[in-house]
Figure 1: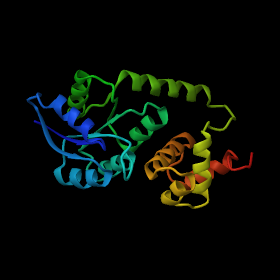
Figure 2: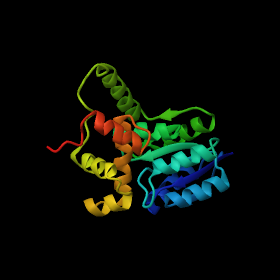
Figure 3: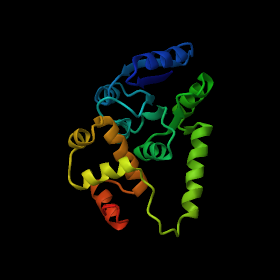
Length: 215
């Protein structure tokens, strides 16, 4: 029996996923959470075989949930299930310990196949996700000797400058009129694009690429 836990902040989405999986005789849906903190607490307690995890959650990001679960319960396989199809989010989730990544427009058969693959100790990435990652790898290979700085959006640059100014996520959200969840998503994208592991790394890379100069 494959024990499955679902985390999504949209109750209707979570219910829909549960309905898709309910007819599989070897699947057991053991729990559900709508927030990241609730997910961490329940997953560490229940220890499911597979955690279906959205990235955008109302309190902390799915990236943080994935890191915590992977560190405390590496036997729990994380399958990211998200609408986000940007390379930065995909690679960030993989870096956080996810074993698979599906877009929410994937069909039932692919979702079932992904869950079974992760349960068997394998990885699973949808074709769209694989194409995105492979394209990124090819681009990075071509850019190995490039001197141009990584491309970050204007909003990401605004977030970066406030991170360098030692602002908290809450303070950044207030200054830029964003949700804390959105700020955390931008932070995760910056970590990936700049090849940093933490805030200190972001500062180092920002200085290296001279990203903090006034335009």
